[in-house]
Amino acid sequence: MLRDACRNEQETMVVGRNIVHFERIDSTNTYLKRAALDGAAEGTVVIADAQTAGRGRLDRLFQSPVGKGLYLSVLLRPDLPPERLLSVTALAGVAACNAVERVCGVRPGMKWPNDLVLENRKLAGILTELVVLENGRLCVVIGIGINISQAAEDFSPDVAEIATSLQMALKHPVSREQLATTLIAELDRMYEALLQDCLLPYLTAYRQSCVNLGKTVQLIHPDGSREVAEAESIDEMFGLVVRTAGGMRTVRSGEVSVRGLYGYLE
Ligand code: BTN
Image 1 (cartoon, helix red, strand yellow):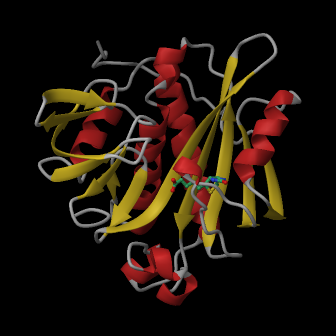
Image 2 (image 1 turned 180 degrees about the vertical axis):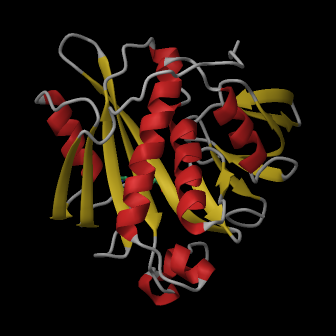
């Protein structure tokens, strides 16, 4: 059970105590996974101005044009059992929504499990990867890509219909530096909540933000087969509870991909 009252008397500063910046890199996640094996410090953040091989879930490319987005990864070394790490992507999603809201005054929705959406379009994505160390322990690399100043023509034709940027939605520029600083602070707060098992505020926020709830969705299985379902709720481990022809079921991040009936959301 989630505890509903947690205290954090002490200021914490884990995420961002070491920040590495690249003008251009293949992928901040790929870099940080290698660095994790070489002993990089917990909380290390890698930010790039551009990625040449930015990666999304399900082996998709994450378009990362120079200076137009925030491309950031963070390394965590939580001393927690693997089941406590299942929620990390959703927690990072809430942290990213908090950061966008604090900087821009609008709160994105969450498309289960890992996309931030604004005006029914994808604003940001999160790719969480686990690294197994030689001693068998796990560390976590959370990569977040937020579209900031792209115009419609900056997206390739295959994503132009479903993608947006903060500038496209808000009609004014947004500071990448301010967003990065705020996101790092929110990820630090989120990590403390994970370590203290104080996740109720994050679960509540996720449930409020999840744009799939109450809608008909398609579950896309790894073999490509599709199944129609009603998205009913989010369980305590951030799984999506769905009603299918075969009955109620909970799907977990990584098991299936979710689409609307006719496209990205609807
Ligand atoms: C998705 O849309 O499925 C997830 C996209 C995650 C993109 C970020 S950008 C920073 C980090 N580096 C990567 O290669 N991917 C993540």
